[in-house]
Every structure is written in C-alpha cells, then in structure tokens.
Amino acid sequence: MRIWRIALLPALLLSLSTGVAPPAQALTPKTKTLVTLYRQGGFAGFDDRVTVYTNGCARLARRTGPTVDKCLTPKEMRTLRGHLKRLRLGRSEAQPQGADFIKYTIAYRGHRVSRYTLPASWSPVVRDLEKALEKYWAPD
Image 1: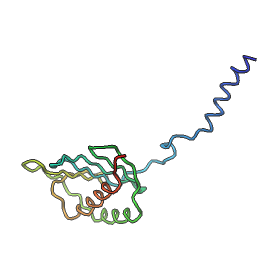
Image 2: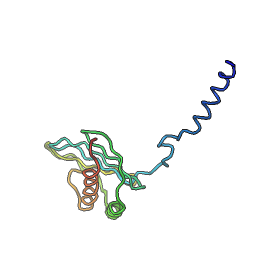
Image 3: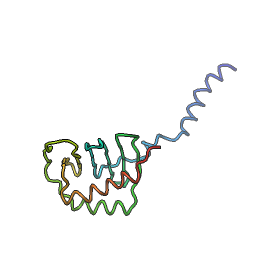
Image 4: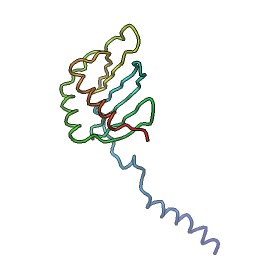
C-alpha cells in the first residue's frame, strides 16, 4: 500500500501542475516600444521615465515610488501618434552652464536625443507623456 502512495504522488503532482495557468509574462506577447521620455534634474530633482508601447500601454516610473503599468485611452494614443508624426528629434543639446536645468531625453525610432530647451515639435509629445505620468502614476 505504501508503494502505491509513493508512485501516485508524482503522477498527482504532475496532473495538478498542468492545470496551473502560466505566468502573466507568458500570456503577453512581446510589445515594441513606441516612445520613451526621460525627464531628469531641475530644482525638484526629477528622475521620471515614461515608456509607451505600440499596444497602447505604458510603463511609468518616478524617483519617488514604484513603477506602474497602465494603458492609455484610444484617444490619448491617437493624439500621441499624431504628435509623434510631426516630431523632429534633431541633435542632442550640450548641457548649459548653471544648475537646476531639466534634461529631456526622447527615444523614438531607434534614436535617442537629449535637450534642455524644447523645440516646437517636442513640446506636444513631452506634454502628452507628462500628462500620462500625472494621470496614471500614483503610488499605492
């Protein structure tokens, strides 16, 4: 009788483990990054990051708390994509003399550029991504 228990235990464990759902990462297909904004420095000591993926979801992180994953609304994604179509990255800007400057870095379409003053085509994109950070990032 004891031998049957020992022999049945591995079979029972195997059958129970096949009914367990795979981890969430296995269910989610790999998504590509659409755009990433880094905001660093300034008097407030910003160290923020907003990454928006092609599926409309975003990963939001601040220096002062946890990383949060949220999905933008379809309207927010349409607006962001429209602004990204007009985005001209240009070249990185040298750090200005002095302190308390905010450094904005945008990574888009394989290019990564940092600026301290926002060109006209950057402003709508930065505004959209900062709005998402304010709206969706909240520490629990």
